[in-house]
Image (cartoon, rainbow, N blue to C red; front, side, top):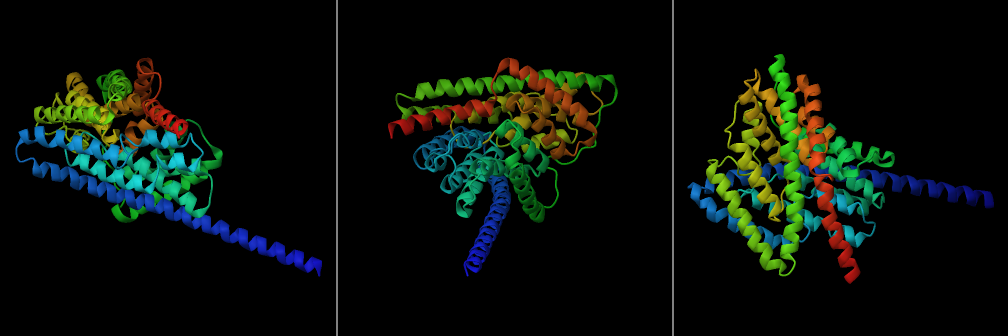
Length: 437
């Protein structure tokens, strides 16, 4: 009798474990698919927002009113209605992995904040801000997967934040390998065996959602460009050095400027933050006017045109560089992935034209790899993501060389990576708030 009861109890526990096991898996799969679907909708809405700004801008000088006003309103909403939504979103995801309590993580990654992040990023694009949606997609993906973990009772919240971040990158660019590399190299700064399966499955399911709706596409189109002769190979070194200096300077200015702005705002946070937002918005508008509108938004079209082998205006790279710094320091929600890639494309275009290379498109992707690797200090992510975005299969080794030269030079300018340096600000604020509470 006792043996029968023991067997019955054991059987019940096995069934219960099996039921819970499959419930957690189904919820996790649903969360990863949701990240993919939300990323696709976000991408479609971002394109619409950029087109809306171009449609409203019937005269170039209108930007001097629309853009500063938009920055002002965006910062106001970010500080009052959606606190924690400002900036790229990647530093918030990194910071959230440092805490273990639910309440603190909820202040950086929540579904309510997800809505605000998407809404305000779209609003920024509709005002001409030099921002991207890819960084925000990382925060959105991490928030969705964190909510999934709680709904499914899975635990492993740090791993699921990592998985959501990777899925966000993969779905945003249709770059599954880059999503995995980004999670290892930038988000965790290490290979975590316990969570590697979560990251892989999340990337696969988010990628399947993207493939099912949009099909297999390359973000910047496809290029068969390759290097020919000594001049083209010289461009690898020149792009690496120039990209390292430019990307390193960008990271240094953003980290330094963020600290200085925070100190300036502290005595009167709301009023001074809004004043700075208006000044940054005016700077972006002036850059847009001087570039005939080329520096507004993500810079995607200009970069794709360059990848296809067309030289860009020499003024594009410096003006886009300035507009992206102003947008990043303003405090509005928005990422810097796509704008940084477009700056790198402009830089590569200048180098290609000066050197008289045989393949302009090849040197453009080299500039993108070097500058992006320097700005983020994630060289492996840089060459993988650009190879996937452009199908530049003939350029793998040159992309690696340019990315690692850019990364090495950047480290002499800015010792800590941009995203991790910015994450410290969120961590310090949350720690200070917890002490007050």
